[in-house]
Length: 301
Image: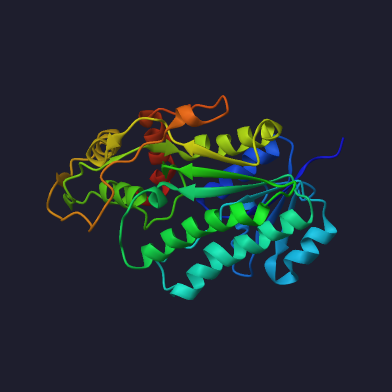
Protein backbone atom coordinates (compact mmCIF):
# COMPACT_ATOMS: atom_id res chain seq x y z
CA UNK A 1 0.00 0.00 0.00
CA UNK A 2 1.48 3.37 -1.04
CA UNK A 3 2.04 6.03 1.57
CA UNK A 4 -0.31 8.99 1.81
CA UNK A 5 1.31 12.23 0.64
CA UNK A 6 1.12 15.41 2.72
CA UNK A 7 1.99 18.86 1.39
CA UNK A 8 3.43 20.91 4.26
CA UNK A 9 4.19 24.62 4.52
CA UNK A 10 6.36 25.97 7.34
CA UNK A 11 8.18 22.67 7.69
CA UNK A 12 11.45 24.32 8.72
CA UNK A 13 9.82 26.35 11.49
CA UNK A 14 9.44 25.66 15.21
CA UNK A 15 6.35 23.45 14.98
CA UNK A 16 7.11 22.25 11.45
CA UNK A 17 10.37 20.52 12.38
CA UNK A 18 8.62 18.53 15.09
CA UNK A 19 5.60 17.75 12.92
CA UNK A 20 7.79 16.37 10.12
CA UNK A 21 9.17 13.81 12.56
CA UNK A 22 5.68 12.85 13.74
CA UNK A 23 4.38 12.50 10.18
CA UNK A 24 7.28 10.27 9.14
CA UNK A 25 6.80 8.15 12.25
CA UNK A 26 3.17 7.72 11.22
CA UNK A 27 4.25 6.49 7.77
CA UNK A 28 3.29 9.52 5.69
CA UNK A 29 5.30 10.91 2.77
CA UNK A 30 5.93 14.65 3.12
CA UNK A 31 6.41 17.34 0.48
CA UNK A 32 8.02 20.36 2.13
CA UNK A 33 7.39 23.65 0.37
CA UNK A 34 10.62 25.65 0.68
CA UNK A 35 12.22 28.86 -0.57
CA UNK A 36 15.78 29.60 -1.61
CA UNK A 37 16.57 30.92 1.88
CA UNK A 38 15.08 27.94 3.76
CA UNK A 39 17.49 26.33 6.22
CA UNK A 40 17.45 22.62 5.37
CA UNK A 41 20.47 21.74 7.53
CA UNK A 42 18.11 20.80 10.36
CA UNK A 43 17.13 17.71 8.37
CA UNK A 44 20.67 16.52 7.62
CA UNK A 45 20.92 12.83 8.40
CA UNK A 46 17.47 12.71 9.98
CA UNK A 47 15.12 12.13 7.05
CA UNK A 48 14.89 9.59 4.25
CA UNK A 49 14.94 11.30 0.85
CA UNK A 50 12.28 8.88 -0.36
CA UNK A 51 9.88 10.05 2.34
CA UNK A 52 10.66 13.80 2.31
CA UNK A 53 10.56 15.82 -0.91
CA UNK A 54 11.83 19.41 -0.88
CA UNK A 55 9.86 21.46 -3.40
CA UNK A 56 11.02 25.02 -4.03
CA UNK A 57 8.05 27.34 -4.44
CA UNK A 58 9.74 29.08 -7.34
CA UNK A 59 9.24 25.86 -9.33
CA UNK A 60 5.50 26.45 -9.23
CA UNK A 61 2.67 25.17 -7.06
CA UNK A 62 0.72 23.95 -10.08
CA UNK A 63 3.62 21.77 -11.16
CA UNK A 64 3.88 20.30 -7.66
CA UNK A 65 0.21 19.26 -7.70
CA UNK A 66 0.59 17.91 -11.22
CA UNK A 67 3.62 15.79 -10.38
CA UNK A 68 2.36 14.32 -7.10
CA UNK A 69 -0.99 12.91 -5.99
CA UNK A 70 -1.37 14.93 -2.80
CA UNK A 71 -3.75 13.50 -0.21
CA UNK A 72 -3.63 16.22 2.46
CA UNK A 73 -2.22 19.73 2.92
CA UNK A 74 -1.08 21.21 6.24
CA UNK A 75 -0.45 24.94 6.42
CA UNK A 76 1.88 26.14 9.20
CA UNK A 77 3.82 28.95 7.52
CA UNK A 78 3.10 32.46 8.77
CA UNK A 79 4.56 35.95 8.94
CA UNK A 80 4.02 37.80 12.22
CA UNK A 81 5.24 41.23 11.20
CA UNK A 82 7.96 41.22 13.87
CA UNK A 83 10.75 41.57 11.34
CA UNK A 84 11.18 44.05 8.53
CA UNK A 85 8.15 42.79 6.59
CA UNK A 86 5.78 45.40 5.21
CA UNK A 87 2.01 45.06 5.14
CA UNK A 88 1.87 43.71 1.58
CA UNK A 89 4.34 40.94 2.50
CA UNK A 90 2.20 39.93 5.46
CA UNK A 91 -0.93 39.81 3.28
CA UNK A 92 0.81 37.75 0.57
CA UNK A 93 2.26 35.27 3.07
CA UNK A 94 -0.73 34.86 5.37
CA UNK A 95 -3.62 35.26 2.98
CA UNK A 96 -2.76 35.00 -0.73
CA UNK A 97 -0.26 32.12 -0.44
CA UNK A 98 -2.52 29.72 1.53
CA UNK A 99 -5.48 30.67 -0.66
CA UNK A 100 -3.51 29.59 -3.74
CA UNK A 101 -2.74 26.25 -2.10
CA UNK A 102 -6.33 25.74 -0.97
CA UNK A 103 -7.66 26.49 -4.45
CA UNK A 104 -5.28 23.87 -5.88
CA UNK A 105 -6.42 21.42 -3.21
CA UNK A 106 -10.04 21.90 -4.28
CA UNK A 107 -9.13 21.64 -7.97
CA UNK A 108 -7.16 18.42 -7.42
CA UNK A 109 -9.61 16.78 -4.98
CA UNK A 110 -7.20 16.83 -2.05
CA UNK A 111 -8.98 15.21 0.88
CA UNK A 112 -8.30 17.88 3.50
CA UNK A 113 -6.57 21.18 4.16
CA UNK A 114 -5.49 21.58 7.80
CA UNK A 115 -4.78 25.16 8.86
CA UNK A 116 -2.81 26.31 11.90
CA UNK A 117 -4.53 29.24 13.58
CA UNK A 118 -3.71 31.22 16.73
CA UNK A 119 -5.55 32.22 19.87
CA UNK A 120 -4.64 35.83 19.01
CA UNK A 121 -7.43 35.88 16.42
CA UNK A 122 -10.03 35.21 19.10
CA UNK A 123 -9.11 38.31 21.10
CA UNK A 124 -9.42 42.00 20.36
CA UNK A 125 -5.84 43.16 20.66
CA UNK A 126 -3.95 45.88 18.87
CA UNK A 127 -0.22 46.05 18.29
CA UNK A 128 0.62 47.87 15.04
CA UNK A 129 1.85 45.33 12.46
CA UNK A 130 0.53 42.48 14.60
CA UNK A 131 -2.90 43.81 13.66
CA UNK A 132 -2.27 42.76 10.06
CA UNK A 133 -1.06 39.34 11.17
CA UNK A 134 -4.35 38.86 13.03
CA UNK A 135 -6.48 40.34 10.24
CA UNK A 136 -4.91 38.08 7.60
CA UNK A 137 -5.25 34.96 9.74
CA UNK A 138 -8.92 35.76 10.36
CA UNK A 139 -9.59 36.62 6.73
CA UNK A 140 -8.02 33.42 5.45
CA UNK A 141 -10.35 31.27 7.56
CA UNK A 142 -13.33 33.34 6.38
CA UNK A 143 -12.38 33.02 2.70
CA UNK A 144 -11.36 29.36 3.04
CA UNK A 145 -14.90 28.40 4.01
CA UNK A 146 -16.13 30.04 0.81
CA UNK A 147 -13.41 28.53 -1.39
CA UNK A 148 -14.14 24.92 -0.46
CA UNK A 149 -17.85 25.42 -1.21
CA UNK A 150 -19.36 22.05 -2.01
CA UNK A 151 -16.05 20.50 -3.03
CA UNK A 152 -14.60 17.19 -1.86
CA UNK A 153 -11.97 18.99 0.23
CA UNK A 154 -12.41 19.34 3.99
CA UNK A 155 -11.15 22.36 5.93
CA UNK A 156 -9.79 21.76 9.44
CA UNK A 157 -8.83 24.81 11.52
CA UNK A 158 -6.53 24.26 14.53
CA UNK A 159 -6.37 27.12 17.05
CA UNK A 160 -3.05 26.84 18.89
CA UNK A 161 -2.60 28.28 22.36
CA UNK A 162 0.77 29.44 23.81
CA UNK A 163 3.13 26.86 22.33
CA UNK A 164 6.61 26.36 23.77
CA UNK A 165 9.46 23.88 23.63
CA UNK A 166 13.00 23.29 22.32
CA UNK A 167 14.39 25.13 19.28
CA UNK A 168 12.03 28.10 19.28
CA UNK A 169 13.45 31.38 18.01
CA UNK A 170 15.64 33.29 20.45
CA UNK A 171 13.61 36.50 20.23
CA UNK A 172 10.48 34.75 21.53
CA UNK A 173 9.57 35.38 25.18
CA UNK A 174 10.41 31.98 26.69
CA UNK A 175 13.82 31.45 24.98
CA UNK A 176 14.69 35.07 25.87
CA UNK A 177 13.93 34.52 29.56
CA UNK A 178 15.84 31.21 29.59
CA UNK A 179 18.84 32.99 28.10
CA UNK A 180 18.67 35.76 30.69
CA UNK A 181 18.45 33.24 33.54
CA UNK A 182 21.26 31.06 32.21
CA UNK A 183 23.62 33.95 31.56
CA UNK A 184 23.36 34.88 35.23
CA UNK A 185 21.78 38.28 34.73
CA UNK A 186 20.97 39.44 38.23
CA UNK A 187 18.00 41.70 37.63
CA UNK A 188 15.42 40.88 34.98
CA UNK A 189 12.75 43.49 34.37
CA UNK A 190 9.29 42.13 33.63
CA UNK A 191 5.66 43.21 33.61
CA UNK A 192 3.49 42.11 36.54
CA UNK A 193 3.32 38.61 35.01
CA UNK A 194 -0.31 38.03 35.92
CA UNK A 195 -1.40 37.39 32.32
CA UNK A 196 -2.73 33.84 32.05
CA UNK A 197 -1.89 31.50 29.21
CA UNK A 198 -2.64 27.93 28.19
CA UNK A 199 0.95 26.72 27.77
CA UNK A 200 1.17 23.69 25.49
CA UNK A 201 4.31 21.73 24.62
CA UNK A 202 5.19 21.62 20.92
CA UNK A 203 5.12 17.79 20.73
CA UNK A 204 1.51 17.79 21.92
CA UNK A 205 0.57 20.27 19.20
CA UNK A 206 2.21 18.08 16.56
CA UNK A 207 0.26 15.10 17.83
CA UNK A 208 -3.12 16.78 17.40
CA UNK A 209 -2.40 17.26 13.68
CA UNK A 210 -1.64 13.54 13.38
CA UNK A 211 -4.83 12.69 15.26
CA UNK A 212 -6.86 14.82 12.89
CA UNK A 213 -5.32 13.08 9.88
CA UNK A 214 -6.14 9.64 11.28
CA UNK A 215 -9.76 10.59 11.94
CA UNK A 216 -10.39 12.75 8.88
CA UNK A 217 -13.24 10.55 7.58
CA UNK A 218 -15.23 11.18 10.76
CA UNK A 219 -15.35 14.96 10.36
CA UNK A 220 -17.72 17.37 8.66
CA UNK A 221 -16.43 19.46 5.79
CA UNK A 222 -15.51 22.32 8.14
CA UNK A 223 -14.23 21.63 11.65
CA UNK A 224 -12.48 23.60 14.40
CA UNK A 225 -10.04 22.20 16.96
CA UNK A 226 -8.38 23.69 20.03
CA UNK A 227 -4.73 22.84 20.71
CA UNK A 228 -4.18 23.51 24.38
CA UNK A 229 -4.23 21.83 27.77
CA UNK A 230 -7.50 23.35 28.93
CA UNK A 231 -5.72 24.92 31.91
CA UNK A 232 -4.12 28.31 32.48
CA UNK A 233 -0.98 29.36 34.32
CA UNK A 234 0.24 32.90 34.81
CA UNK A 235 3.39 34.10 33.08
CA UNK A 236 4.75 34.67 36.58
CA UNK A 237 4.25 31.00 37.46
CA UNK A 238 5.94 29.87 34.23
CA UNK A 239 8.97 32.14 34.66
CA UNK A 240 9.33 31.22 38.35
CA UNK A 241 9.35 27.53 37.36
CA UNK A 242 12.03 28.27 34.75
CA UNK A 243 14.11 30.03 37.40
CA UNK A 244 13.66 27.16 39.84
CA UNK A 245 14.63 24.42 37.37
CA UNK A 246 17.61 26.38 36.03
CA UNK A 247 18.79 27.08 39.57
CA UNK A 248 19.18 30.80 38.91
CA UNK A 249 19.52 33.38 41.69
CA UNK A 250 18.40 36.20 39.42
CA UNK A 251 16.00 38.79 40.80
CA UNK A 252 12.75 38.80 38.85
CA UNK A 253 11.68 42.42 38.97
CA UNK A 254 7.95 41.97 38.50
CA UNK A 255 6.07 45.12 37.55
CA UNK A 256 9.16 47.00 36.41
CA UNK A 257 7.78 47.10 32.88
CA UNK A 258 4.27 48.10 31.80
CA UNK A 259 2.05 45.62 30.07
CA UNK A 260 1.68 45.92 26.31
CA UNK A 261 -1.30 47.92 25.12
CA UNK A 262 -4.46 45.78 24.84
CA UNK A 263 -2.53 42.63 25.78
CA UNK A 264 -4.58 39.44 26.18
CA UNK A 265 -5.25 38.92 29.87
CA UNK A 266 -6.29 35.26 29.72
CA UNK A 267 -6.66 32.57 27.08
CA UNK A 268 -7.49 28.88 27.39
CA UNK A 269 -8.41 26.10 24.96
CA UNK A 270 -11.92 24.68 25.00
CA UNK A 271 -10.65 21.14 24.53
CA UNK A 272 -14.06 19.63 25.30
CA UNK A 273 -15.14 20.84 21.86
CA UNK A 274 -12.60 18.68 20.03
CA UNK A 275 -14.11 15.73 18.15
CA UNK A 276 -11.07 13.53 18.72
CA UNK A 277 -9.68 11.49 21.58
CA UNK A 278 -6.73 13.78 22.23
CA UNK A 279 -5.30 15.35 25.36
CA UNK A 280 -1.98 17.06 25.94
CA UNK A 281 0.42 14.55 27.52
CA UNK A 282 3.23 16.83 28.69
CA UNK A 283 2.86 18.49 32.08
CA UNK A 284 4.10 22.05 32.34
CA UNK A 285 6.99 21.08 34.64
CA UNK A 286 8.19 18.28 32.36
CA UNK A 287 7.81 20.51 29.30
CA UNK A 288 9.84 23.25 30.95
CA UNK A 289 12.52 20.71 31.86
CA UNK A 290 12.80 19.45 28.28
CA UNK A 291 12.96 23.02 26.99
CA UNK A 292 15.71 24.02 29.41
CA UNK A 293 17.77 20.95 28.55
CA UNK A 294 17.81 21.96 24.89
CA UNK A 295 18.97 25.54 25.56
CA UNK A 296 21.72 24.56 28.02
CA UNK A 297 24.19 23.91 25.21
CA UNK A 298 23.64 27.39 23.79
CA UNK A 299 23.25 29.69 26.75
CA UNK A 300 25.02 28.30 29.80
CA UNK A 301 28.55 29.49 30.50
